[in-house]
Length: 156
Image (cartoon, rainbow, N blue to C red; front, side):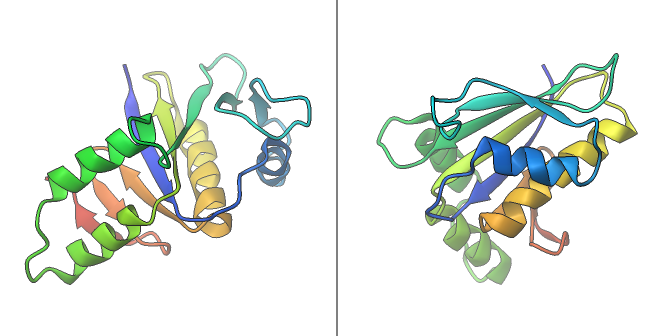
């Protein structure tokens, strides 16, 4: 079990694993991604972010939201249900609007032995998707964050 962070991405293009690795490497040359990819090194569904020897890696999963019954589509429905009706809340309207345009979700599981270096690695990874794939961050038991890192809507 662990703590989860997600990035809800609206971009139409697919994140290539080598692009993610290059971005992460620019912060720390010891960051390493391990996962299965197709023959062109493009298509992936999950990988592990190794950030430090002796620590468990961060499992990262990609969930598409484009098909009925897909994990991503089901997750979106749960989040929208939890948010409920926006009423007069502009912040809720913003979050709902972004969620309804989500194409895929990146889900990171932060395991119990995660340390400050792990949190830093996870932050860099999430920022990659915010910057390059029009993402919005959600942290479990915290809420949704705008692209600048300000809390947009608290989890209820």
